[in-house]
Length: 70
Image 1 (tube, one colour):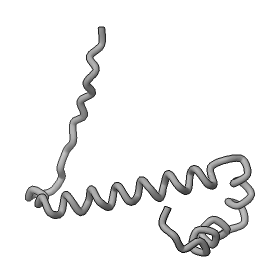
Image 2: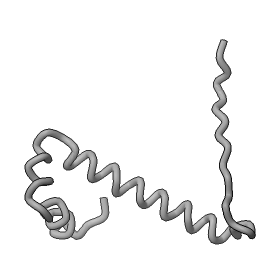
Image 3: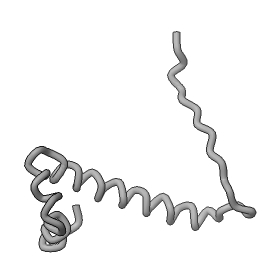
């Protein structure tokens, strides 16, 4: 039977450790990014969204016209 735990090795390529405050800010940015990414994929990821990709800034214009957070 396979174990139910997944392990991932993470390498840090900086000389000093990242402060807990900076790490928390990075986590907040990652959460906000995930929300926006999921919203965009949900709204424009289907077959109907293909035509909007070829017209340049249609997706950007629609998102800024809404002026709300996802």
